[in-house]
Length: 115
Image (cartoon, rainbow, N blue to C red; front, side, top):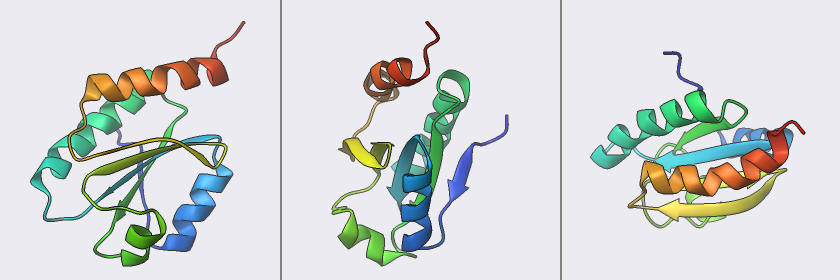
């Protein structure tokens, strides 16, 4: 299965991606987080299978420390969900796939359901 994750290399790139996408999920972590490494592919799979219009953006906050301060990230992993460039929700540390699905479902259906 192809991963739908775009790795971010700068703070400006992250801001551009968020503002140019209708809907995006930002996954913030670093290389020393073992939970993050397990969770990231599961979230990617969820988005690919159930929410294909959601772009997943990944940034390593150790490589781009500016993101930590600008997005008020105090724990990893942190997931921030954006709709039209505005933060819709955020979750940090203990994040379940079921909880994430529940949080994405309603706005996703509102934006992409065919009537």
